[in-house]
Image (cartoon, rainbow, N blue to C red; front, top):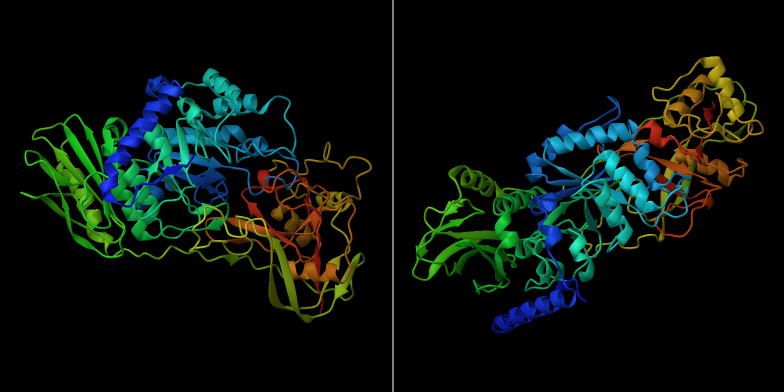
Length: 638
């Protein structure tokens, strides 16, 4: 069954098409004994107003300040609403793409967020204080990491209860298991599922929200299947990789659906342009004010025939008639005529103006690929738009034409490595590499988090990144100065000596040397690579030793010369910390003995060639420290 029901191109066929839509819905609801009782329960009333949501990466520097060690919920919400308008819900994305570097499962990632579950609960409480609903993420494909001592649905219910979450985002899923619904109903009333895929009709009754991510629209706008089947089922339209979001906005507008804003795509940046952000503010302001009309009103898709290339839906409730219109063409349309009732007050809710009604209706102007909203309201009606609402819309409308249609970009800035004092001879346990010009091949898995720069594909029409999960390569020219590098990763024995000599104590001790016991390596592991350290811990050791971390190119060249070895094998940190102002990351080299299998969504593991590089997102020490990541050091040579 199509996720989006296509419409005929010939306007003369629209009446019979609408009749078929009604007949199909009536038959489907009867066959499935569809009951809307759960949608009408007071605990779920918030779903109708959950129009604009944001998928926020918890690694995003907008929401967590690592220097202050604090969530920045208010600053994040203020910034979002200044740009996009009212924020109704957030998905707190937490594990992928770092999930699978070691045995921590996707539940552990929530537990290990800054401040643990208590700290995350305080952030959720702050969202609630701002009137924003919070959804947690469920990754059902995570099967190769540490297993819990109880089934997933019980763990999820516990997390929802501890964090007072309002819903679960069902990553990659179309529906949740029945036992998960039952477990959540015990924990808290009003907890929703939001499936990533289109929810099957037979599960609509207990799935209150879903994404409209995979669909095939045409010149004449189609009808979203689930929106037509159950009007209280909140759909959110999203296209993560495209740069021009106007087609998404139009699809949502014609279907009374909501929108997902998603700019930080697992560490890759695909920023919205100013023009589309303003369109969303204009559109969602109308949807918020008249949410009841969109949810309970009689919906007529492809109502009237305003003009060639211009299409409309009509929503009617309690004497109100609300028209949502879209212009599919590249040109301004100043000649759009809409038949309206002469006995009503008529307003253009997008431009914030009162309409003049002539004998043949009202004439309006719609920008290229833009939107319009005409409201017919009986005189004195309680839902007549007030002057303050119209004034805000008019002010936004006035700046629309001057807004840029170019997507916002971000520049990646890298941290400069520390200098070292060259020794008179190559230190014991290190091998020298001569200065040289080095043209190296970089091999990587094309993942959504990118590698050095974003993997954004502005012209992409698919909801997935072209070439996703395929191997990719590039060539990089670099000048290497002479250096010496550790033959093996720094060991537990080495790191213990450093701690005893220096008295080093990290700012945050969460997960620090988690594999040790009582401040000591477990007997028999003294010469194994030290793990459960972060960049600060590794840099502190290197500085104490008069060294630094290797640059990515230095590490790679040394391995290509067969100078390095490890047993067991662990990933190595490199001095490659970078940030685009939203996401911090570094590059790992080498692979590890742990190789998760069973899904394409995990990062690579196992024994990897020296050319292979992997991006590792950085949040805070308690999460950055990992059971398969160690390091080695280098020293500059004269």
